[in-house]
Amino acid sequence: MRFRAVCRPWRRSSVDPRIRSSLDRRFHPWRWLMLRDPLAAPNRRRFLNPSTGKCVRVDVPELRDHQVLALTHEGLLVLLHDINHVCLLNPLTRHLTQLPPLSTLLPHEEREYLLPNYHTKFAAWGSGILNDDSTVLLYFNFQRMIGIAKPGDVSWRRFEFTSGVRSAISIFTGRLYCVTGDCVMVLEDQPPRLEFAAKLCMRVCGVTDIVHLVACAGELMLVHRRFSRRCDRNNVSKRRYEPVSSGSECWYSAPR
Image (cartoon, rainbow, N blue to C red):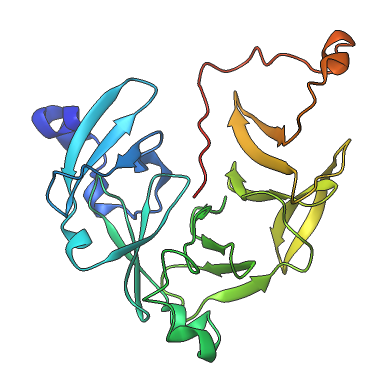
C-alpha cells in the first residue's frame, strides 16, 4: 500500500483499498500487532510486524470516542461507541464497516452493564471473519456466547456454548475451533452448532491445564501446558514428544 501511495502508474492499475469493503482479505493487516505507546497521543498507535520487524505509527481518530471491543485474527478493530453503535475498522486503510447494535445480542438485564464493564465481562477477544468473507464473529468468553452478523443485518445471531470450553477460540482458514474436555470442536453455521473435529489423547482439566490452538505452517497446532512439580522425562526418552520443525515464528502467551 505504501508503494501504491507514491507510484501513480501502480495506483492507476491496482485496486483502491479505500473503496473496498473492510472484509476484503487482500487488504487485511495480517501479522500486524497493535501496540499502545503510553507517551503517545490517545488516538495514536504503533503497529509491529513480527515477521519483518517493521514498525509503523498510525493515527486512528476513531479511538477518541470509541472503545476497542476486540482485535480480530485478521488485525481489524471492532470498535464500540455505545451499545447501539458498533463498527469494524481496518486501521491501515481506514475503511469503516457498520455492524448491528449489541443491544440485539445481549439480554435486556445485561445491557446497562456493557459500557462500564466491556473490558472485563464483555471483551470479545478471539473474534474474526468467517470463510465466506462476509460474516463477522464475536466471541464473549465470560458469557460463553458467540454473536454472528453481516454488514447490513439489523441484529446479531446468538449462539451459546452448552459444553465447557477449555481454550481461547481460534479462527483458522475462516473457521472457528476450540478445545473442550477431550476433543477439538469446530463451529458450523447452518444452523450455528459445535461439531466434533479431532479427539484428544488426554483429558484437559480447567484447573491444571492450559491449552491454545495456534496456526503453524498452514496447520492448526495444539499447545498444551500443565501445572506440575514433576518433570516428565520418561515421555521425552520414549519419544512421545515430537519437536516442531515446521514454521519460522515464535509464539507468545500471557494472561489477560
